[in-house]
Length: 231
Image (cartoon, rainbow, N blue to C red; front, side):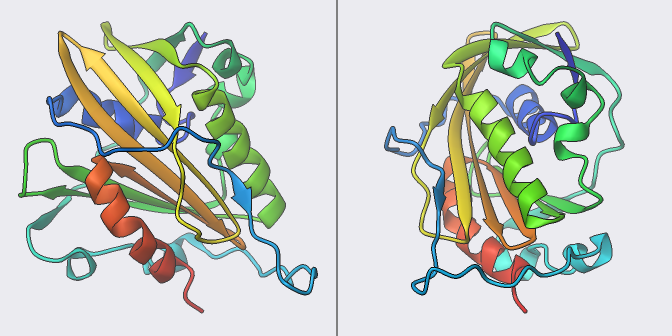
C-alpha cells in the first residue's frame, strides 16, 4: 500500500520533522484516552452553518512570529513532493485505499499552512495547517484519518528507502472548538527517536491542525484556534 506524502493528515510535515530533526528529546506527559469529543450547545440547537473560508482568508489567520514570541523563525514552504510513502503494518490506513492515494482525505478546496523553528532547543519545530469546507466534510474526513492513524499502535513508514518505525497514542485535548483530535507519535530511525504531537480542532467550517514538538503544540494550539476562528 503506497500513499502520497500529502494524503495522510500532516504526514508529510511529520515525516520531515522525524527524518531531519530526530532527537532524544523526551515527550510531554500525556493521558491515554480517546480524544474526540463534540461540544453541544446548552439549548440543544445547532449553530447556523457558516460558509467555508477562502485560502486567502485562511492565510491571514495563520500564526506569525508576533503571535509566537521571540525565538521563532518561519521556515520557507518546501516545494511539493511527489515521492511516495509506503505504510506497512496498518490495515486501517490501507483501508483508506485509492481515496488516500489521490489526496481525497485532505483534498479540501481551501487551505493554508506555515512552519516555524524555535531556537530554544534542537528539533524544536511547529507547523500549522488550516482547512475550510462544510462542517460535515471536515468532521468526517479528519475524524476518519485520525482514527485510522491511531488504530495501529505501531507501523512502519518507508520514505526515500529509509525505514521509520512509528508508534501512535491518542491523547486528551483541551476543551476547544466543536470537535478535537490529538495524537502523540514516536518516530524511530537509525537508533534515534523523535516525538511529534499533532492536534486538530474543528470550529464550524475551519479545522486547525498544529503539529511538531509536543511542548510547542501545547503552548500554541489555543492561540492558533483563537486566531483561525475569529469573526
